[in-house]
Structures are given as C-alpha cells and as structure tokens.
Image (cartoon, rainbow, N blue to C red; front, side, top):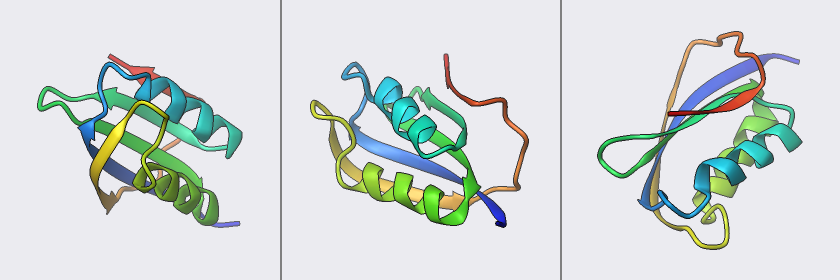
Length: 92
C-alpha cells in the first residue's frame, strides 16, 4: 500500500484536555506514525504518516471532535512529504 503524509492543524479547545494523548492513542490504533504538538496560538499540529485510508480515518476523527473534553472548531490539512517517524509521539 502507498503511504501518504499530512499535517493537520486543529483549532478550538484542544489544549489542556488530553487532546495530544488521545490523538496519539488513535494514531497508534490506526498504525500511523508522526506526532502531535501544541502550538503557541492554542492549536494542535498533528503530523500523520501511513496508509492513505488510515490517515483519512484519523482526520475524520479529528474533524468529528477528537476526545470527549475537546471542542474542535476547525481542522485544516495540507499534504506533507512522507517521512520515516519512529512511532507516533507527543512533542513539546
């Protein structure tokens, strides 16, 4: 299967609610690699690499609101070059 990579920028109440942790768990369950990172503007950057269908599943999960206590207002995505990340991590 062909691999793809995206950057997703998630806006809303997405910091301080376990968003990165739950995104990491979702990505690991889907077999993706990459990372989730809080940005200074209050958003979260998610880089996801893997099979296209699984990356799309993660983006769908993000757009549907992510974890229970988050409130996602919008998700912007853009393609990225495929990189060889070691697992899916939380960056600080």
